[in-house]
Structure formats: C-alpha cells, structure tokens
Length: 406
Image (cartoon, rainbow, N blue to C red; front, top):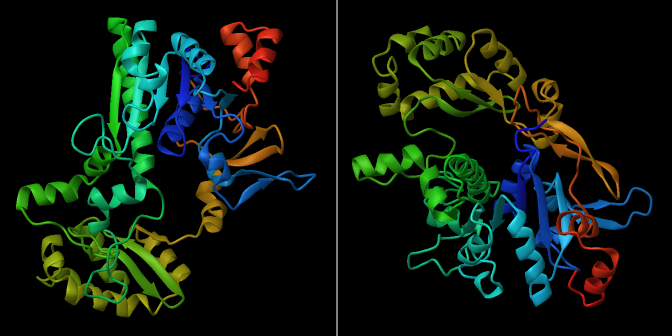
C-alpha cells in the first residue's frame, strides 16, 4: 500500500518541470496517465545523446533525459488536435483526481481542456498549470525556459566566480534548477489541494510560474537585498555570510570545508597547525572572519595544499569538521553512503528488460516507494488504459487508430 494508491493523475506535461512532478506522484503510488502526441511524444524522448539502446538489436531508444523524469507512468498516445482526441482527454479528466499541464497561457482553452471547462465536468479535479510566468502579469503569454528563468530570477547574479577574477561572470547552475524546483513545488501544491478537497469536496486551480519559484528559491539572497537594499553579487565557491565555507585546494585537487560555527573553526585552526587563529580577534568570531576573509582564506589555502584530498578529508573527519570531496557522478554512485542508501535502483523496462534509475529521496516508513514500473515506451499503454478507464472495446480502439487519433 502506497500513499497515493487511490489517486489518478492525468499528465499533459512535457519536458521537465511537469514530468518531474508527476514522476514523484507516481513514486508515491498515484496512477499517472501520460498523454503524448502520436509518433513523437514528449520532446525529451529525443534529447540526446545518450540514448537507451536495445540490448539485443542496438536500436536507439529513448534519451536518458526522458528516462530521468518519467518512471512509473502509463503512456497513452492521443492527438489532441482532433475532436475525437479532445473528447478522449476530457473523458479521462472527468475521472481524474489531478491534472498537470505546462502549455503556454491559454493553450488548452481551444481544445476545451482548460480548468474552467473541465471543472464543469469534474468539480473535484485538482488542476495544476505550470508556465514560465504564471497566469497573469505582462509576461504571462511568454514561453519560459529554465536557462532564461535562472537569469531573470536572480540566480545567475549570485552564481559564478567574482567578476574581478579570471573566469568571472554569470553562470547557470549545472542542472535545470528552475524546472526541478517548480516540479517540487507542484507536488507540494497538489498534495495541499488534495487535502483541502477532503474537507470541501472541491478541487481547485494551481497556478505555478517558473519565475515565481526561482525568486522564492533565492531565500536568504533575496532577503539580503530586501533588508539592506544592496543586491548580492557573485562570490564563487565562497559564502557571503559564513567563513570558511568553500572549496580549498589540496595537493591533488580540491576539498570542501564547511565550517558552520566558531567551535568548528577552532578545531580547524588546531588541525592545520595554527591554534593561534582561533584567538586572533580577526578570526575568532564568524562575523570577524567574514570581514577579514581576504586575509584568512590565503592562510588556510597555504596549509590545505600540503595535504592530499584523501588525507585532509580523513583528518577533518576525525575532528568532526564538516568537509567533503567534490565528486563526479561515477564517484557519487560509488560512495559508500550512496550505496548504503541504494541511490541507484533498477526498474523494469519493456524494451531493455531493466534500466538503472536514481532513487527517490522520499523514505516513508509505512508506504514505501516501489520501483516496479520504468519509463514507458511511447503509447505502450494506450489500449489498456482506454479500455480499462474509459471502457472502449477493440472495435472502438481500431476505429480511433484508423483515424490517427491514437
């Protein structure tokens, strides 16, 4: 028994923010019906390399990008540009608990699949719209993509090396953080709306804009500006309010040292052979270290360069000084903690037999995440879903297929 076993989700989203949301709902047990365009499907099926190759024929399959955000779902191909296709989707929506879509503003209204139309069919429907800029405001009609949202929402103003140093300038995050954060917020909003429905019997419309989410994710950086009136700037791997809290060079690479309080700094100073730092009025308190970071950081760097990364990490761990390696993905999955937590799992796949997947971080003691369904092939479940959920027989399915509707 899983937490959302009784919830049916209609997924009209593509690419990342919406699919990431619905994958998490599937992980929690929801039955997720992913509606895709016949012949091509979700754009990310082709966003490669790398692609999943058939183990026997070597034939190129779906891209890793698609596989990352679509496990646990049922794929149904429906051409929503046709009246018959629109009616099929409406019929599915009439039976659904949740609908997630990320079309441009008003994009589904012409099909009669907007919230106002569908709530007449299903007043209990929780309808989640994900757009670049939300449902109102001057930018609402614009398309929104993660990269531009990272820039517009302030993230790139504080990410990257200092402008005064070589390589300085704005830098995007290495993952689509605006999309992924929006997917997380969509899950939170959907669960909140479902809980509200328990009390009122009514669904509601959820309006999520990538820009809104990105600005909210700026948290302390945003509040720094709101309180002081000064816009934060890029600090590279350093921290604006904590020192030392950054990457330090070693004899063979770099290591993260993340000193979170004055006691930890005293232990670091002692371990590096300079206990006098801890009683130096320039360094004793964090606020003083922030003020004198340009003096302190070179002193620490001179000492960390004398160690290999492995030796320094072992020394700091013995003293319980927060630190860690900068891992590439191969080292991430080889890490003993990652292996103990089983962060790599296997899921069934219709073409490959099984494929690896990244584990859900959700650990619920009474309703565990099950890894029993991999990302679906395009249209893999069309007949089964339309027969089971809508009651269509073989003749009806054959007629729809002949018209190119499914």
